Length: 171
Image 1 (cartoon, rainbow, N blue to C red):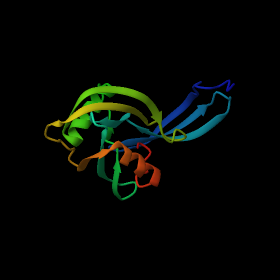
Image 2: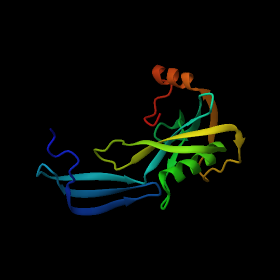
Image 3: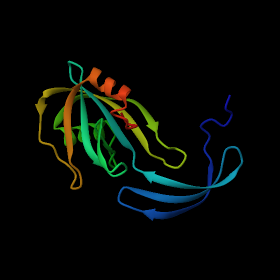
Image 4: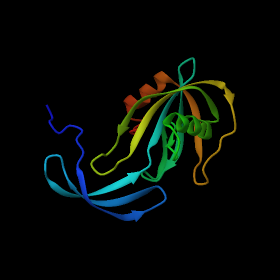
């Protein structure tokens, strides 16, 4: 079954075509595990975390933040970039506190997923945080962000997902 499953290709040539503040674009010549020689553009990003944060009574934190890809506010789960030297647990704890003001009591990684792996190397560690909503501190946004956070019953989140009202991949 799938004899080349998870086998890496051999990068023959690599050229960084663009470097921005959030991502870079690389042009690659690759010999694939199937022995094809291909040219591909790769969007490189830092790894990310996406957080399912639950209270003891099964409320979940949703955030709303402007997203340039849709040129509108987007409601989803809290998320952010893993900084160099951080574990995904540290990044989830930090991002959760920065965006919501809530303090994580426990943090665990559920899995890691990729998105658009045909042209992007981004990974998202899906994290579960348990917290007490009575314990809250100041929020700290990056200079170019503003995030609104709300507690919503978990069943309501599932309804909004089913109805397509929340349709981000990370949710």
